[in-house]
Image (cartoon, rainbow, N blue to C red; front, top):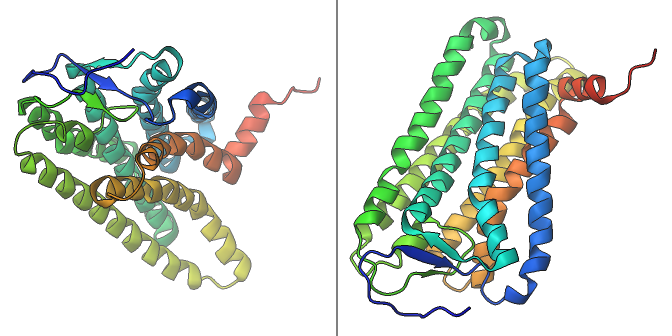
Length: 315
């Protein structure tokens, strides 16, 4: 099926997602790792939710935040994968204008929420290591619920202008999006209007969220490292730092590809389009797969719970 490059409309009823331009013949093969990543993400995050719910010893702040992270990852991956696979398998490239705006809203708001959860988990590690006697009194269930609500509301409110502004622009050039899903900058670039408000606001959100969150995480870990180096023995230092290693891996797996994806979209004009698209997919799909694996492998309490639940009991 072919699609015209030009059209005469001011408010499109649909957009056309091309998938990965230039790699159309390999779409079916590319779908295999996509399916694998998605299946592992579903299995891993649902397993984390099940283990934390059923294991009373895991009803602690770190694991509550991990559950919020798991739900966020599940919704984030599901917001793009079904449509991406329908493009790869069935060449189903059309997406409604409102559905496209909804997809870009979920992609960006959930990314902001995930970044906020990383900050909340860093704060939990800071209190647990630097002020352990007050950990249970500071991070009560009500405080955790308020932190979680604040993180969600921040993502919801900060990203709300994205689709509201995008809906206002006239689209009279093309309705073809060279990507597997709708993202803010790829959509507004199609408008035949001055989109500087959308562009500047998008940059503000990127640098505000990333800058503030990474600064707070850096402050937390500076204090954590100071506390760790004051411990009397090397074994105590390694054991204490081990409680933070999973969280650090999650931060790196989320922020590094995310920053690379956003910055190459804005400024990487010489980067091939296929690299842009693949990095955007890596940023959205790999962390939901890796996060439960990281915590499952590196957290002893979760490993022990998995063994108890899934190892046959001897009579």
